[in-house]
Amino acid sequence: MKFPYEKFRKGQKESINRISKYLGDFIVLKAPTGFGKTIVAILSHSNADKVLYVVRTINEIAPVIRELRRASINYTFIFSGKKMCPLLKGSDVDPDDFWVNCKVLRSRRLCPYYERLSNVNIDDVVKVINESSIDPREIVNNLVSKLSVCPFFMLTKLIPRSQFVVATYPYLFREDVYRTAFSDELEEFYFIIDEAHTILNPQSIYEEELSDGDINQAFKEARMYSLGSEVISFLRGLIDVVGKIRSRMLKKVEKALIYPGEGFLQILEDAIIDIRLKRLKEFLESPESLIRISTKLTKILKFLYIIKNPNFEVYGISDAYGKRIKALPISYEPIRDRLKMAKGVLMMSGTMPPKPIIDKILGRESQYIDVESDYGEVFPQHHTYYAVYAETTSSYHRRGTYMYSKYAELIVKVYEVLMRGIILTVYPSYQFMNEVVSNIDVGISQVIEDPYTSLSEVLSKALSYSKAVIHAVAGGKVTEGIEIVDPVSGKSLISTVIIAGVPYPQPDDYVRDLRKNLVKEFGRELASKLVMDIPAIIRVLQAIGRAVRSERDRVFIILADRRFLSKELKNLLNIRYDLVTTDLKTLTKHIELFIKGFL
Ligand code: SF4
Image (cartoon, rainbow, N blue to C red; front, side):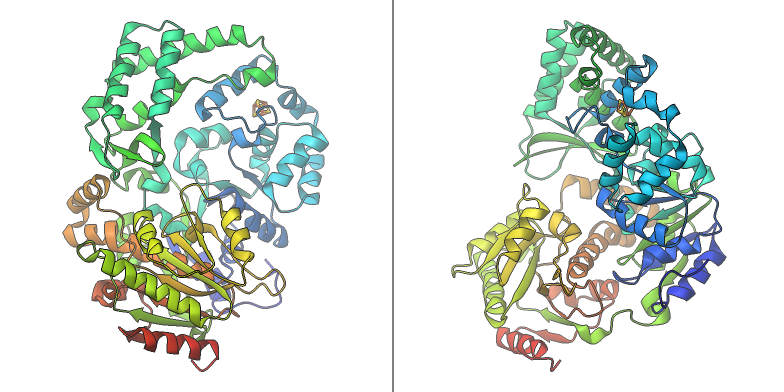
């Protein structure tokens, strides 16, 4: 297959050849942002008959569509059926309720969009897709406005005739979600997993949550529909357990206090059917009303099914979002089980841990391609300058007013040195960030991320200043997703990144249980690495990746924690430190020299 660009970037051709050769194995492709991983992944699978290419978010589908079009490969894509449904128009319904409602509508032939599917010519569908932009939401809207069909079932109808299916993560990692779209077995597919470092954090893939609001609502419904005493007393018990949660960090809740046993699940299922039948009568069978039928009991039932699995435990938290319980995985088993089914797996990321660690997690030897170490740096090193500022640390033992003011001083001095641009400052937690920010006592232009901030808000506020500090939390929305580039030149506007403390996960009960469980499989040393060091390093590299978007970007990176000098973190980071200092003047001098192009 022809390469659709003028020339290959360093390592692209070699990577395509190596991946094609190993197809069928577990392959890792470690390459930085800007290398062109997507086209490499696509072309190396050009002889594979069926490929499931998974991405984390809907927005990440668009670049894959762009490259598939360039390579002239047949494709379809899917994301949440609920989000695509034109009857629902964005209303909030539990996904399980949504699928039952959709099934009822289809079986009663009440959904006009579904009914039209058989009247539509597939060539017309392909034409609408190809004439739309690469934005998957626009394609979905066009399928509705131009053909009046159900976009979800139209796009899944294309699966048998498509070489590539681009989908969001749940379609690979969750059997229940997979089954809503696919009739073929998972074994038919080669998997390509984008941002594959995510699988090292099983919590981000399988987290399920119940809030006190959900449970109270379910209790109200149970009383309103006069469900049996067993359901009512179970919910009363649940309200009691969640009501007692006080901890601001995840704290273990004994499963026995929540899980009522297998027999009760059937009782709950019957109760849900009961409610649904009563609601059906209320809703007068209008498709728009019927698709919205929902009961919080469905969410509770799903939660109970998840914690039935011995790989999941329950944790409670009480924070700005309210009181909640979470079902979280304490092993890699659910992920490994899915990956084992593939014809072959390609895992891609700019921040993949080293091969020995990946092999242990996968339980088999991978073919590991590290583009920069195998073929040379994709972006010349002189564009990034790494300084360790060893005067500060976010270590729990050293936290206090003195340390917070040291971080505040660092941020202000860096701000003063810069003429323009964005300083992205990344903290281990909101609490730590707020302490530091409260110590900044001079007027600077700043944007502070909070749990409710949207990316677009951060972006528009930051762009309204010629220079600004963005305060963000490692692993949060900003560091995982923001791209601040000059619309004309395409260059990154983030000129400096300050990693304000090693962003280790909080030492809560979940982290402790995960480590305890992993020790059995991997031993103490590797388990600690997997639970603490590797997530911290991935967060650091992700934050740096926000600033380095193209080969023209020049970024000064300050690793502001003396623990970055430890052998473990240095080895995992695998970057050269250009400067190590405890002197703020020396640091700012080097920033000035870097800006002037002398470094
Ligand atoms: S079949 Fe109808 S109800 Fe179901 S997703 Fe499609 S449009 Fe929505």
